[in-house]
Amino acid sequence: MAKTHGETSGSGPGTGPGSGSGDRDTTGGIDESVRAELTALRDSIDNIDAAVVHMLAERFKCTQRVGRLKADHDLPPADPAREARQIARLRELAVSAKLDPAFAEKLLNFVIAEVIRHHETIART
Image (cartoon, rainbow, N blue to C red; front, top):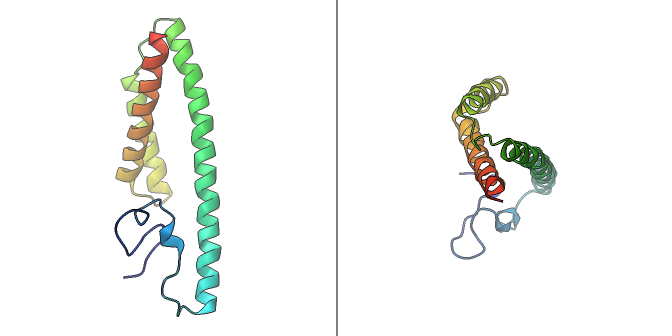
């Protein structure tokens, strides 16, 4: 089975997802044109990952302001109705982008949980 960006063939420290070790070619016999294409694709993936991190940072800057506004006006940290609308909206976007909507929902639920945690912290300060 072919490896994808971030996958590794070993186990133990430094070989898991996110360790970067999946980017090293250990076969030694890979065709140079394939190596060049892999490098170009991985460079694009790295750029996209950087953009995702920066977009999440901007999103959290906004949600921190929302949390402060909610705390200042004694509003609850969570807004289940909005969260449900956002999940439905994101699932539709995922379908149109040919992304698994269940994955998109899990990702948004993870982000929402972190936002709520931030809002609860802000409300206590």
